[in-house]
Image (cartoon, rainbow, N blue to C red; front, side, top):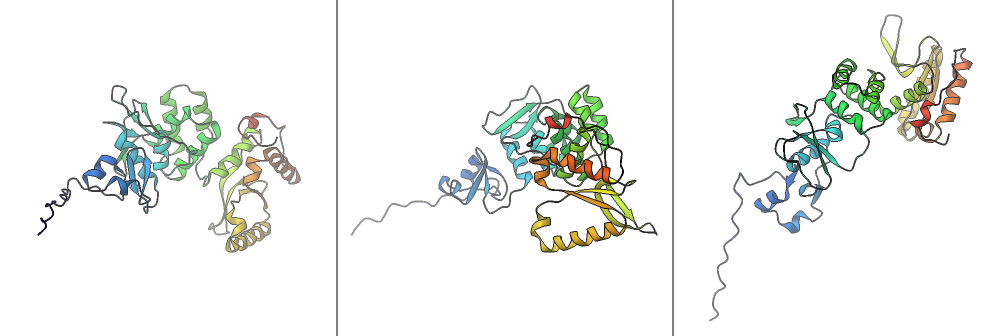
Length: 317
């Protein structure tokens, strides 16, 4: 009779303290302690956020996943900062290959690829349970990374999300000391701007020397009720300036709404001028010419254009 196979005890299930929530960012070493094999970990079942930090692939990506991930590897005492902090707040910043955190100058800093840990004297605050630079400190920090237009986009979006105010940003900039880009950017941040493309259109005009348009204009009925809102424009001349994204061309419902909107504005004596993406990224010079033309058509005073916009809008001319 053959000898019975040797007894192989089943692997001990992980203790509750060892178990990680695979629907949240977790470290490779914690996966092993929880019984998730390397084969599973590196299969399509999981995706890597940064080296040695993973999450279940079926979980929809959220900015706080990156924030949690960078804190897992950035070192003791670290807090979320820079681009990663801005995205955590729901603000708009350019795509960046690294996740960012900060730490006190004397603390150990991670050297993991894809993670940048800055030295900082900021005192972090808690947002969604995570230590992170305040919205105003985030704005100040990113002045060293972003160009003028992207910095104003960041400021406008932080204000729009209700994370701060233009006045609070100005106080933070004053406390940070003289910094030309910060001063120029914070003086261009406005309340009521609802999209980064609206910011870009406004800055194209301002940097070209045109009068700054009002933002978030409210058209009211005779009894004072707000019946329409306009992205930006000039109330005294009844010139409305708006940016239309791709959904305005692809959605039949949106298209119908746009037609009715134009009819209403025309009935109230407003002239509507609309920009699209190519107007800002491919042909800013022609866009300025079109704006100037409609301003003159309405009898507005148009100053000579300046060339300062060219450094920030690299279109065809």
